[in-house]
Length: 198
Image (cartoon, rainbow, N blue to C red; front, side):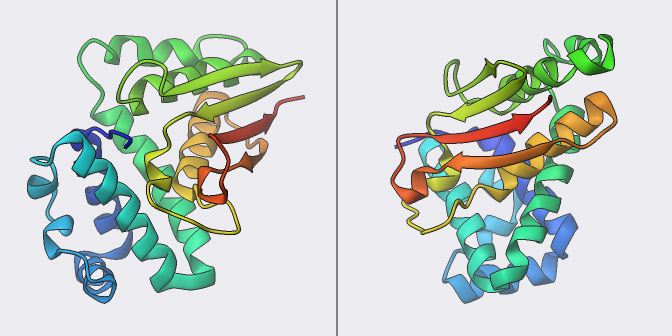
């Protein structure tokens, strides 16, 4: 079972609530048969790491089911806003390192930006890794709490895609083509996101 930081879950719930509105979030949870406590940032912050991972996956599933085809755009926007909240709520040890991702020449910024995202999002070292593929990049989420107990024919990690897209735009001021090339919800061993930087 994957682990997910309850502190990050709290930030995620706040982000979803801001994006949808608190009333709409409660409706989504009710329709999915999930506890309305998942809309309470203070309550989710008290969960343990396993329960936080389950809640993170369950909330995203509820949004996918409720919004259907519109869920992709909503979850991408949530991921983009979640990135901004992750920066704001970074630990004191990590905060001084955040500006470093933007000090390199623009062409060299995508890798440090993804490395920063990994440090902000990982529950423990090695959960998420970034690899160089010639001129392109590959972010690999080895545990992918988004996909916990999820099964789908299509990749479902839209929040992660939004996080990646926004972190790259934040660092380099431009958008990059990217795709989720494998997803644990489809039976893959890990979730992989290819970023075209060439």
